[in-house]
Image (cartoon, rainbow, N blue to C red; front, side, top):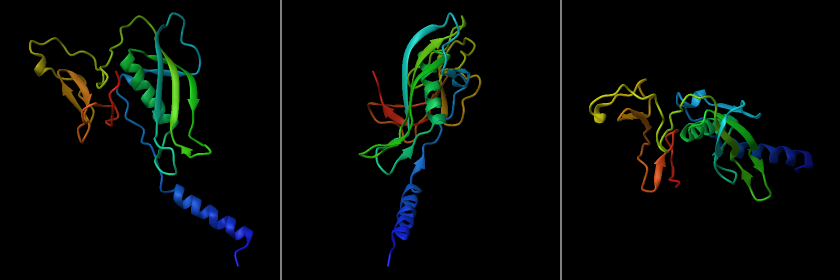
Length: 187
C-alpha cells in the first residue's frame, strides 16, 4: 500500500530524475575585446557616450527539456554584443532568470542593458559575425593579413580579422555567433 508520504517521495524522485536529464547552457568563450567590457548595475562614468539598448538570451526551451541559461552565459553574450556595438560599458536594466510558468519551465536567462562608450579611445567595432581584433600592421595585400594576436581555437583569420567558424557551416539566412552557434541573421 502506498501512503501519502511514500507517494511524495516517489514523485520527488521521478521529478529529480527527469530534471537531471536537462543540461545547463555552456558559457561561450569571450573574445579579448569582450573581456574588457564592464557590465554593472550602476550608471556609467560621466561623459560616457550612449550607444543604445542591448538584449541577450542564454539557454533555450519552454518545457521540461532544453538547456537552462545562466547569468555567466548571458553576461558573456552581453559583452560580445557590446563589442559589436562599439561599447565598453553596459548598464544592466533588466534581468529575467529561468522560472516555472503555468504553461512550462522557461529556461532562458535574459539580460537587457544600455551600452556606452567610456573614454576617448576608439573602440574596434566587430562585424555582426566577427570578433574585433587590433588592426594588423598595414600590408600591401589584405588577403595575406595575419591576426595579431593569433585567433583562439574555433576561429579563423580572414584578412586580419578573427571570425568564428561554425561546424557544420551555417545555412543561408544564418550567421555564426561568437560562441560558434548558428543563429538567424538580424537586419
